[in-house]
Length: 174
Image (cartoon, rainbow, N blue to C red; front, side, top):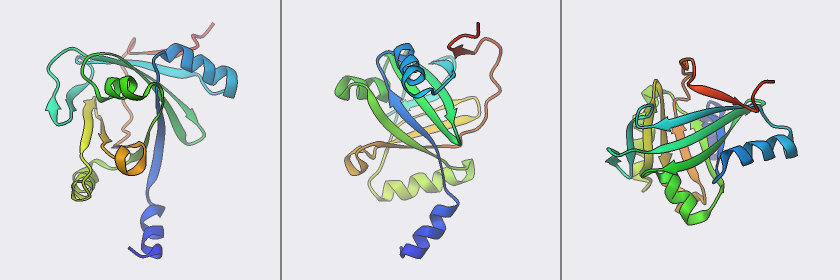
């Protein structure tokens, strides 16, 4: 692609999120609040009951898993903290191998464009580390670390109407 073609292509793209893996999500949320003034956080628990079609390295996960997600908006960017708790997830493998820290950048990709995006990446030798559906929201953690030094994530970034009790806020309202 020429530089102008790259400029044109990138004008319509949107980086939606930056994500970090942590061994202690509550401690991390509090540090973001104390050090940077970033929060409050929406905290969700993902298990086999809430995350459907969970696949790790192409294999459908049929055993219990749990990870916690905390998200907050900073301008037009979402910051996500992830704590793997148990079960076979790419997130747990990442934490065990590298410890906590920067994990991914997520690009918003429309549902209709996801298959083509994944196909093009496959041609470039990039596979999917982890995928799953949370209601209408879908994510794909891509195997880009050896090429980019970080995980690239794509997903539709769909708004989910959370049922009562599904999410908590940190810090809790007083």
